[in-house]
Structures are given as structure tokens and as C-alpha cells.
Length: 266
Ligand code: PEP
Ligand code: MN
Image (cartoon, rainbow, N blue to C red; front, side, top):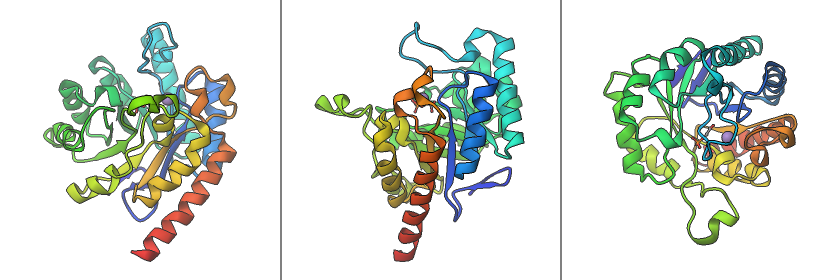
């Protein structure tokens, strides 16, 4: 079990991490933070350094230089304090580690950087919990083996996150990735680390988030990371997969019911 502020990850209670894909403004973040808190989320997320496939897409406010990065990080901190939620954001490169660690409670390593040994060692050295996302091409063994690069630095507060693997054939026409649900119990057989699921990036479709959230909890996940926005249509990144705070509440309530069922049948 990993304790972050007043939240326990991997304990009896499910943990929900929610917030926008990308932080776009202070007003946007505060409004979303208030919404996800009311919906029952425990931890606030918001991307500041975004890993984008195209250099021409919005790269996150962090790309506009240190001053803007620091300002956005301070909004995240402020929103977390205001609504009493620990905060998490992705660290995409070694140069960002010191700065990001000053502001957030959990450091996120994105799927694309799961293999970056130097980055893993650097974040581990910050002595804060690390959320490590599985690369979309990585096997379970590889995923756990790269988590060990964090543990090897003496940091055992590692939260794993299944976020979908590459779909086969024409799968990509339907879902962005394939949520590997079997990975959840399989990983629990191998390690004591908590494992979360991310149904937002795994599906890339808001209409699938509810079902895949329930399925991940049924599979035994300790919680979920869900991208949330009060108006997904106006988001600069990942609008197609974000749900609203009202929808998030429905997801969380349903997941809690699924969890009770799972626990009662064990
Ligand atoms: C994210 O959580 O913001 C993200 C980019 O996810 P992933 O690294 O899983 O693609
Ligand atoms: Mn996203």
C-alpha cells in the first residue's frame, strides 16, 4: 500500500485519479478540480509536458519555457490544496524532474518513456511515489522489469498502470488501444505493487469508459485514472475520450458497487 497525503493506494478503498488530459489555464484546471472532487475523485491529474505524436500539436504549457511550466505546476498545486487532493503530472524528460518534483505528490512516467532507464533512475531519486505506465508494446515481464529500475534506487513506492496495448488488425479503427485486463490479476500474482487501469487512453472513446472502468475494477484493479473535462469538445488534447464530472460520478459509483460485489464473492 502506498500512502500519498490522506490517500492510500492499493488498500481496501478504490482510488480514482481524474482531471484533464492537459492543463490549459488556471480557470480550466480549478473548474475541473472542483468537479472531479465532487464526483468522488481522490487525486487530481493534469498534463503539463504532453507526449504528442506530432510536433505540430499542442505540447502542453510546459513546452513554452520554464516560466510557464512553473506557473502551470503552481496551478496544479493550488488546485490540489484547494480541493484537498494530492496531485500528479507526467515527467517526460530528465531535465524536468527537479522542477516537477517541487510541485507534485506523484511523478508520472508515461507509456512512451517506460523504457527510459535514466529517467526512471532520476525520478526514483526524488523519493516520491512514481506512477509507471505500461508501454503499449511491452510484455508484462518487461513492464515489471523496468519498474525494478525505480526500486533499485531505493524507491519502493511504485504504482503501476495498465493503459492499453497496441490493437491488432483493424482494431485501431474502433479503439485507440486494447485494455489488457488480464494484466491486472496477472501482475498481482507477481508483485505486491498496486495496479491501476486507464480506460481513457486505452479506448480513446468516451462511450467506452464506463464499461471498461467497471471491467477493470472487476479484474481487481486498485483504482483508475480517468481523463475528465467539463466540456470535452473544447479541450486541446484528447477531447474524444474525456468524460464530464457528472459522468465520472456515475463511473465511480458503479465501480464502488462492482468492488463490493468482487470483495463479497472472494
Ligand atoms: C497521460 O496519462 O497523460 C498519457 C499521455 O498517457 P500514456 O502515457 O498512457 O499515453
Ligand atoms: Mn490524454
